[in-house]
Length: 443
Image (tube, rainbow, N blue to C red):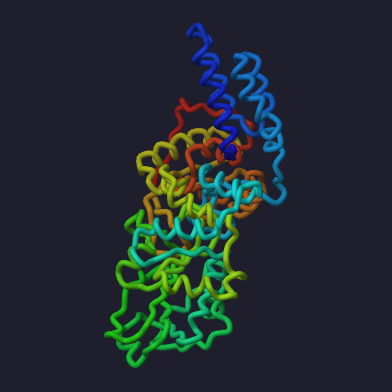
């Protein structure tokens, strides 16, 4: 569970002051150890850990920590009935149960500052729009943010006032919300063309003065279509994608716009570094026509969500998703072995194997990444019973099932969550040791 940025800053400032003013090495080592223990225990044991640090801290450090004490205690009492923390060990990032990927602290902080309501509003929406347009790094292009991908698609009705909408029959995908793409264009007269197989350029013969919808189905990437000089606006829908090119295998709005696509729609979330939203990126004339229509007010995101989208694009630190996707295979193997040693020492677990199947961004999609899994068997529970039980815990642990085995995949699991995951899986009846001579089968 992440700490709010102000809490981390308060702790760091306090520890730094103690280190500066301490007169001997022993004092410095003691304070550093207490700080490390505090960060591990928060938020559950925040009160006790803060008390321990304050008692041995200097007056300056004590004052810095006390400033945020009351707010931090409120943080430890956060609502968990509706907002249950999620650990994603299922091997699929964009799972319906949750991704387990948090929003980074700088992104969250900017959104909180705007949403809190005590900021000066000097044309805030216009400032956000101008900043987003500059960050796309493409002349004559802009970005707009809607409440969701479905809302972004619905906002396209503005363009239908003067053009017909055309969709190839193979592009009628299901959106992440579960809505079929044609249904998200409710109220429009949608012309269909081609067959249900792959797109062929001749499928669009005779189509002119139209908006053509192209969608990434997870198996076949979108590519520009040569309309041979006809007056056609090409619109790409990316259920999985990033704003700027960050990973070679993942489609991005920036690359598609550079290839000749006029407008790209994609969801906000872990891949973009921000929170849930619908993002429109494309030619400024198209973005302006959508935003100037009165119907945009029903689709646009709140200023705080727009600010978080902006912050995600400007944050100099790697996003939580980037950290996960860039984790090396050797790192995953080592973590899997350590966790396996711990779990095989638990009396409630009767079998454990390490496998190396790929993890995915979506179930059944083309995006695969090297990973490591633990295939586990419980002494008394079936794999399905164990899976259901873990999903109802706090934090909830999302797992997979392979026959009679429960599967724990490490690709989308932060290293910081390994201990919590192992604790959730074990019964606590035995005390595992990392040095125990346990033979862990690998497949």
